[in-house]
Image (cartoon, rainbow, N blue to C red):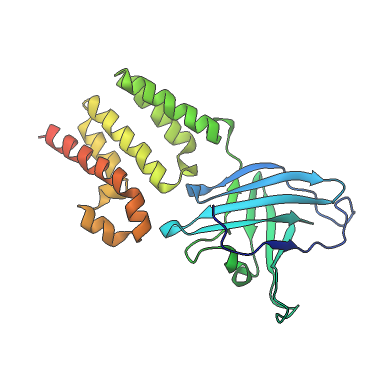
Length: 249
């Protein structure tokens, strides 16, 4: 993502990660927010530095984004933009708290306004992030979609449907809404080929495009950039909806 903000300086307390008063480090790895709104990456603790590097990348409506990076000490990071000489040293700092909730990481900030320069107006980063199962890592999601496509192209619609339904059940809540609607559209057209017209229509109703009549209604419901990005999927949904409606007559 393009960063439109200045480089960050990281303020860290002079507290060693091995201190008896410091909270244990967070499990390193890649985490995803429900709904696919963002990703959190945690590096292992760097022994000689005594802190843990992190990055957060999120997307909001109208393609607005957040991008933050720094180091965590005692489950907290403090980010400060480089300042001009006339700026006060006590200006608000962006404080980010990381809380381990079971196997998830809850990210919040008591100073969201001070963090706003790291985000577009319609994006945020205060989500609960969870580590995807082995079946839902980015690599596995790609492989599973390809496995579905292979069976679909072979016209083995029954097996294709099974594969995609399992994928949706396992990983659907980690997908960004546009991607999940593409999955639902694929489900619907596969149901159509199996003669399940009612199921096809029911699946399509669960998409953004399937809940509106036409492009004009969709454009009114979505921000401009979201509308432009989603329109190809919407057109596929509307085409398949007509297919299933006509077949059911």
